[in-house]
Length: 335
Image 1 (tube, rainbow, N blue to C red):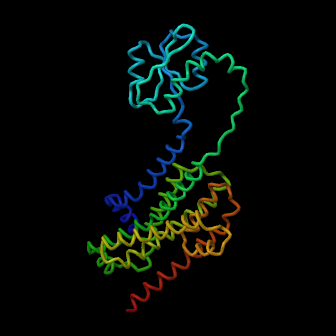
Image 2 (image 1 turned 60 degrees about the vertical axis):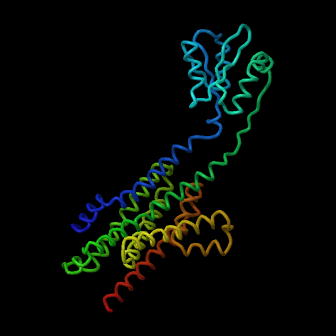
Image 3 (image 1 turned 180 degrees about the vertical axis):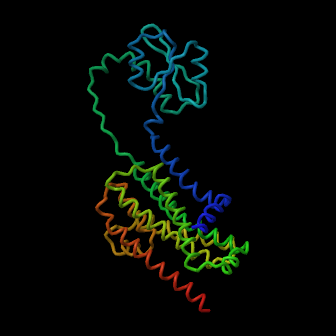
């Protein structure tokens, strides 16, 4: 336990590990913030008017078509319209009609609105008698948003390998690995410490990231935790493999990049291109990240009953790769 505490403390001074932990969290926050934006909200028209210079029914009419901002003086209104960060249309009462003010750098759609607004205002009495039926469009952003969330969560779960790999490689370069070999610490204790290090890092990173960009129902909590825990454990094992085979820091970074590409690219490709009922799609489960990817995607889609095989597949991977690593270490000591 003392060794694990030391490993966790040492991570605080490792910039690579800190960046690895924070990156998925930052991306998750960005997805959550940007997902609230849509083309509809971006294109919502803003009208600028002068206080107490326009009839109340005219202001209400403008509010029905967008947002109304009121200004005390004409200079303030013109400055707001000319502000490059706004797409505001200035509106002034001109007797029984209205006139609009533009800065000239507006989007084309706002120019059309401004040019036709006075005529539409004059015909507003006729418009009130027209019944409008608005059919909500299906958002094309939801599929992309789900894909980004899954990629971010899978990355967070498998970030534990970076914790392990960088820690082991740093110990190699600093000579601490040799000290560990002469200290009264068994190989089993050493492996457990390193595995727990990556496991804790991957688990915490995934849970924090999920909290920022994903809404999990109560019925989904247990399947999600199983996916996170098993994926984080497999990630920790991968870190042990990278740390074992990498001779130096640069080689280790190359190995990590290769592993991340191999773990992310195939599931994305199979999900987007290959039918999920094909044999080729089933073969993609040979990669543990594929099971994680499909499981999280099913959770986002509300298909909780379809992810039952996912924890089983991940468990098989966890046992298999644990045995492989144990055999490699055993052969090393025999040699």
